[in-house]
Length: 327
Image (cartoon, rainbow, N blue to C red; front, top):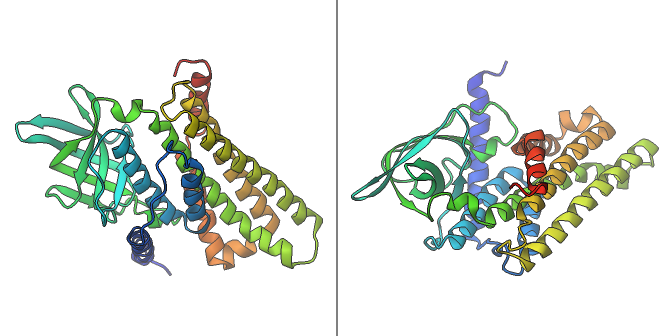
């Protein structure tokens, strides 16, 4: 019988695999164009392609690409070759990081939760609460006082993303932008669509298993209908990403005030599409691939977990606020 230690060992291997792939990817020069610079479609296509084949790797790469974009938008320092960045901006009720300004600069203290790449990244952009509001800071993860606390993650899905708590004990940090700069910039919404591109890629990866069967097996009306439905759903989200990319390039600074609702729509569509694909492919193929095809089982588990980054009705209510012009 498998023990908890066996499970942890298996996840340690997956964490190591994804971290190595992440390091190798960046060492090979991977880096998509910045959003709004005229090639946003290429940026999201690169994220989609990673998501199609390896969602944990795509999660790490998307975080790095987003961090590079944030630093460029907020006039932060240039990212040096060999650095692997994350964006740790989750603000759950149970975790809070405080920022204190000292004569020698800013210091951070507290436990940051939902830190993907907790041990794979060399630096991270971290949100923290200061006296003048929420701020963004660049943290060198090799600094004294930075301690990842893995072990709370219990799902096999997205285990390779190494999402863990990170304790910060009086850690030096560099402020990036002013209060609320991270949330108030147009790129916040553009970056959210980048995540949706990864979800869409993950859905396509799950759908590939059905496509392979349909193309090689004898025709089956129910399976064929599922493939058709999946194709319709994926084509819809791909079209939405293409339209959104053109709109971002035409108005990168969001002068029209449409970035929030654009992101809400595309993210909502991508999340719904991912859910529909998981259901349709699972029903069409049955239990066989889930039980016996390690690649398909991993992709399905990863996508199931990653889609929960969309907060369902809460995010749809946020879209309604944007449509009313209150956000």
